Length: 106
Image 1 (cartoon, helix red, strand yellow):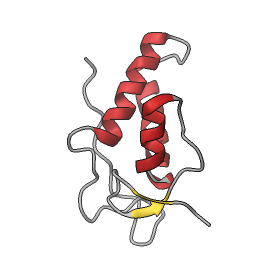
Image 2 (image 1 turned 180 degrees about the vertical axis):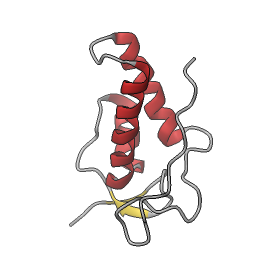
Image 3 (image 1 turned 90 degrees about the horizontal axis):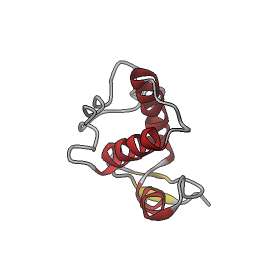
Image 4 (image 1 turned 120 degrees about the vertical axis):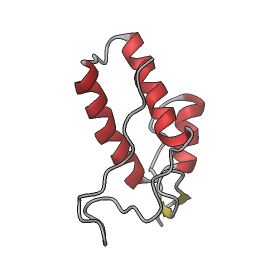
């Protein structure tokens, strides 16, 4: 049976992740509150951040930046998607809606 979560990003009850995506408290928090669908949105956002800022995943500072962006993406102020937004490829989603832009780098 699929594990359901009340997704903090999409604002609906949706299938959850199979396991925490990261170690520690943040990984557990994501596991308990983020749907598979929202996690896919984060993966797309992460690629955008990596390419835009020229990040390298072996740099501890870049890892920390991505972790901060991950937490902001799901749990920051205004992190929930606009009401009525549907992800591309889903019923009602036409691929023209966009998620919120990434916060400015500090």
